[in-house]
Image (cartoon, rainbow, N blue to C red):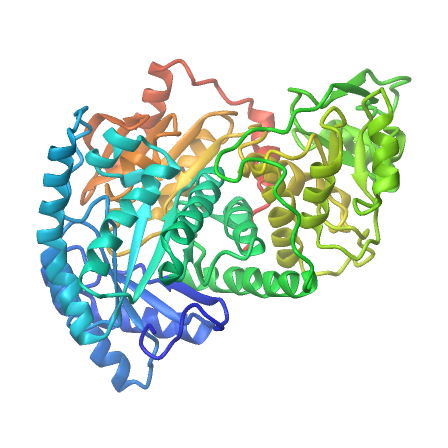
Amino acid sequence: MVGHVGVGGENPIRIQSMITCDTMDTEASIAQTIDLAEAGCEIVRITAPTVKDAANLQHIVTGLRERGCNVPIVADIHFKPEAAMEAAQWVDKVRINPGNYADSKKFKIIEYTDEQYAAELARIRERFAPLVRLCKERGIAMRIGTNHGSLSDRIMNRYGDTPLGMVESALEFARIARELDYHALVFSMKSSNPKVMIAAYRLLVARLREEGRDWNYPIHLGVTEAGEGEDARIKSAIGIGSLLSDGIGDTIRVSLTEDSVHEIPVARALARSTDLRLTNIGSSAPPPLPCDAFSYQRRASKRITVPAVSQRPDDIGAAPLQVGDEETVRVAIRQANYEKLAHKIERMGDYKPEFVYESAGLVEVDPRDDAALEKLNRHSEPTLVAVADDLDLPVIAAHRLLAAKLDPRHPILLKDTLTVSHEPEAEFLPTLLRAATNIGSLLCDGIGDAILLQGEHGPGQAMRLSYNILQAAGTRIFKTDYVACPSCGRTLFNLQSTTARIKAATVHLKGVKIAIMGCIVNGPGEMADADFGYVGGAPGKVNLYVGKTAVKFNIPEAEAVERLQDLIREHGKWIEPAPEAMPELTAAEGMIS
């Protein structure tokens, strides 16, 4: 129980979010919390970076209850056990990050002996046990929330920057809690990389099962630093939606670099669509994963040739296109939709279709039809294979079953739905989330050599969505990639306006990954995959990073975007934008609210 809200068990998937204002601003905190509750948020998190902030949670909670708002409040704690002890007196739940709580990160390489490691755990126990006892005494919950970007030196040196390290970081703290007979625990394994996140959550659940039946604690899902607009919604759907489809997850938070109320419709749509998918599976056992559930490896297939679409109306014959093996994942289009776009393909920039579905010589099968699959598997030549339309099967399960039964030499085309949309007025958000969940999940499993979106009626919008899903899954990087955290009371600059300025200056840098962090809490680690980082260091000051290493310090915020451009130039990754291309690129971002 988090306040009056039950999490886990037979409860529905609960929706969470976090306010963005300064925790010391009591009235703003109350107002933002009420706005979230009225939007459908069931649990609200508030940062408490200092003891002073934690103490003010009393006034925020009191003000909320006086106004008739009973939404449970969670204190978000990172570095200070003292702040956690203060906050636990006033809230319904405390979230701690085991990588930051009473731990240091100096990025030192230390070979811990077993004795030294045990001594470190004893030190952590001494700092953590008082909070556990207080939470148990007050009857409040705790989330042990690991972040991929903020693992301790102890974990990094023994397990590395890995899903296993994330899981072990949480289990170290859980064992301390259990020794004290405290069990009101929720776990999370957040990352800005959906592949890492999916692997970490699956590994966590497997480890909890190994520990025993009484380790079946609820799971909180979230993709951290997802960013904003359409790209952030896609990335969140890939990470959260795929795990919910696996039956993992009891409460979710969609993290957007936008006003928090915009997170709620996305989270509710994800939870609602997943509940329907799980219901549709019925009593039949899901097919086994045709891949390693805990690490990414692309499914092996042989390379085949298909006719490429004409890129200009006057093309007589297009060059052949390679699909499968180590080729990049390709984007297909139905013939009817290609005819609608043919006159403007030259102007579609990076969002062009690559081959026509009906012209690719592919074979459609029902993955339950063993005779048809046996015939295919006996065929000596590799063939592009797709799941047939209009089957009464969940999309992810159907494609996994196909991959499990099909000889690996045959490449597979993925579909977002098994029906072609005939609804031009259909709401776009559910379409986006369904496509990102279904195709993104399979891509992160390593399945898929080509994709076809047929749940979106508009062919141009379907093309953009196809490529953006490939980008968010880390499958095909064709534009600048941004990792941007959601705002909160720790943030040292306006994330929304800053992100917009950085995008305006760098959106033409295809393949460059830029992290935009409001503070240092998750900064260095979440930027491990980024080329460059822009991180709040102090009020009005910015630190710039290359990878996870800070290289420029205390830059005035007014100069920081220009200095970031200079840093990109220094490392040879800057190109001058083509003036005529900029408006088209910006429009193609396709941001939605």
